[in-house]
Length: 173
Image (cartoon, rainbow, N blue to C red; front, side, top):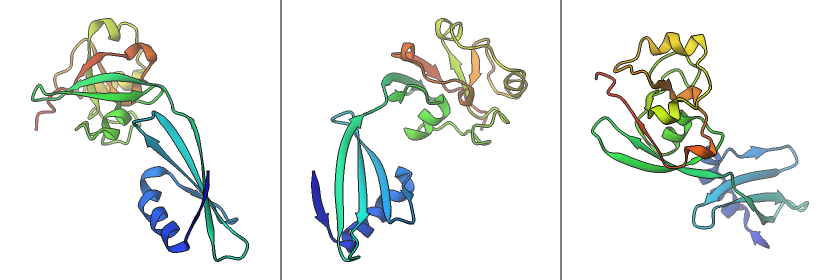
């Protein structure tokens, strides 16, 4: 589907979407935006292209399948359970941030702190890849450390995570 969009409307759409969508602009005046339509579980790629006259913009969109998601429940420090749809392949820290769940990740996911500490059920913990030494070192700094503790920046969501529950320990503050 193609429709004409006025330059002010395009600029308005661009301003609203750029930061959150990861827009990419080029010298050819072509801008691609991605947004997720949760009701259809698809991603729409919307491409704005400047027409040679410089006075009109055209918008076309094509639907493409979205990444697979699985339901995961975070249990916060108060015991509240928050179920989210987690994208397979993303780190647990990013899933928490994407869903406004309070999990700090002060180092930005570089395995240089323990502020994204999570506690997994034993059954899931046993299936996770082995911890690297750096993660073990950081976990030594974590509050409420358990035998099934991991850093959210080091655990990637898998298809078999569907329905798991992960506890966010109290960080002591």
